[in-house]
Length: 356
Image (tube, rainbow, N blue to C red; front, side, top):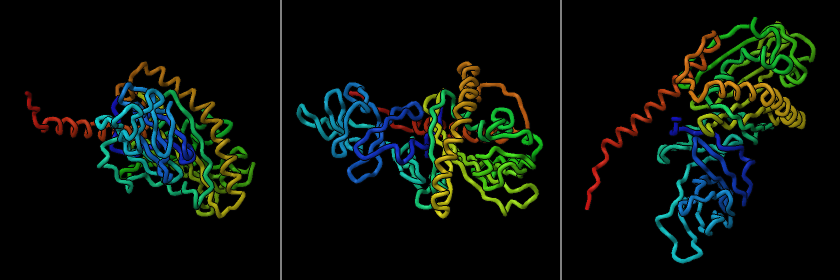
């Protein structure tokens, strides 16, 4: 499967790699290991030793050097082999390195050419900054493509049917819906009127439990697969300005063509004090239930039913809520095609090798 490579993807939460620990992930069909150097900065390198293709995740980290468990070769965070227990360091053995930046409670990795990695292009998820917010964080590994995950979040009409006792209600289909493109962003905005939400949702949004409320659910997508839902509610009939908007991050990174990593979070201002921390921890556990018990099996069955095809290769039906997802996918495909064309053009202009 082809992917956008010149882009920032999430590789993990910042808390997933502790000092002297090794974290292994398969990202865009590549084995990657991450660790912190002696200064605490995150590093990401190929997870395969170039000597005999052993998994470096089976090794050990010592003073910022990653040692292969098979023959003891040691590699630093820059990918260079710096230790050989059998003699001179083999200069030709290097690991591929990946730019990685710790920001917004996450580890962001650049899977393309390193000289194109601009940290200023990391998507804005400032509401997840731990200095300003209590952040409840979760993770799921899903045996379905990231395309299906994007579609799932951009079209939340399904919450009435797939999540009737948690995230949805019988009023969803009666609400208003619009989508729009704003530069590099796709917005999918839904407002539901006069619904009675479950207590967990009502408490998260600061409206009285058991009373009718008007809820807005605005989804923002940015390529390749970084989404945020800005959701809030007010007592029915009141202006939105009186409500409390609670952002949730939905961050997908392809693992393989048919599986993906899913990091999700919910954030509350630290100004709320202990109540905000309690809400962040409680609400992220609440969200995990419908994600894990409803979305995950649905997406995995969809992936199975695709029979090895991607959505690009499949004829799909059409409902009004599908427009945002379709536009996002077309933007992804355009980026993939442009990268492929650029790579082919660069190959055409490479100087011919000179034989002996």
